[in-house]
Image 1: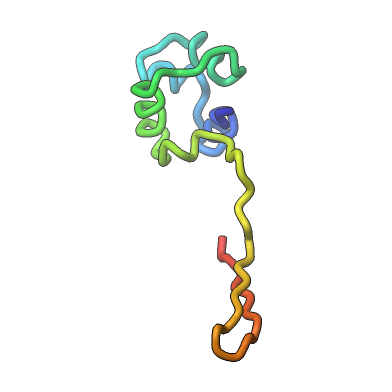
Image 2: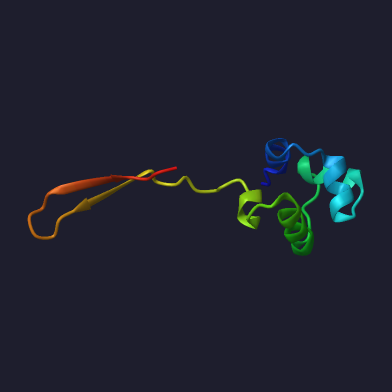
Length: 86
């Protein structure tokens, strides 16, 4: 449910470093990464702050985002496609 392993890799940090920064044991971080433990909200908030990410970025999305938005002009019926920038 969490993508902590990927975020740590992106940030160039290890689980051990994160554990020290949020004052938990490396085993706790390992258990979170492996899905054996889900952190309390306060620890999630600390992890997000330490890794400088929005707390929502810690989670694997459960719903795919629609990349294109289709609209029809209410006056003439012309279809418009707007591509979302990443």
